[in-house]
Image 1 (tube, rainbow, N blue to C red):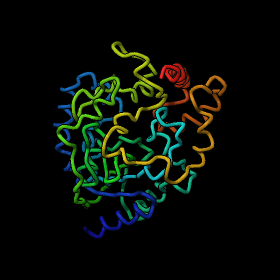
Image 2: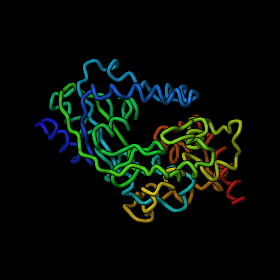
Image 3: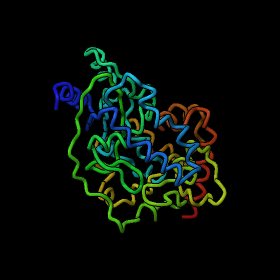
Length: 315
């Protein structure tokens, strides 16, 4: 580990991140082939991937960049209220608010970059996927592996959020990863997906994915799917993660309490939505969706809630 890599690593952990790795910008060269294969396997996904960012264009967009810093924040350390399970995606609601002392201090990390004459782009300001394919970058840095359900896993499971920065300094910090890959015979994630969005291992059709459809998909029910397949999901879906044997031992009743979430958990249930004002939802729910829903999507959220309430009576 070079001096700069070690300094970045120490600073990242001191700012509240749980993992940090650094790869050369040239390590992205192998991603293009994987990206093209994904589009070949699921042609319909091209529209989706073009919408979330130019995943293949990192080197062209940042010609001055020499390395990529990848950071992981473990949200599995927090308790997730039982009444919200099966309704809201945990990744959306378990990132502490910026004012929370439980949150990572990304502003302090960016200030440190500036103070140490390191040009950096990325983080939250530019969007989660702004500097490239973060799961691929994290895998190349040895922070974990990508499993059959397409999620990135560290030793503690898939419950992590990733943040990346391209920087103008040459350095590298690649960890040794000894995480056991998925069993060839295991298909629990695919069986748990009601809409069959996981058409094959490491392959996902976003236009069948309940997580996508309840957020970016405007709550639509595409041809071939039914309302019942959405179960009680209102924003996101964790079925393929919850069914994974590498996640199943996680106890969501334990962990640090996020007061801002606990305070509204019993209020934001689907059966209560008719009594909740748009202003309340815009202030208390939309901000917790990690930009997957915007204020303009309030009607789609209400539609999701109505469907969830109906489905809950059938289960």
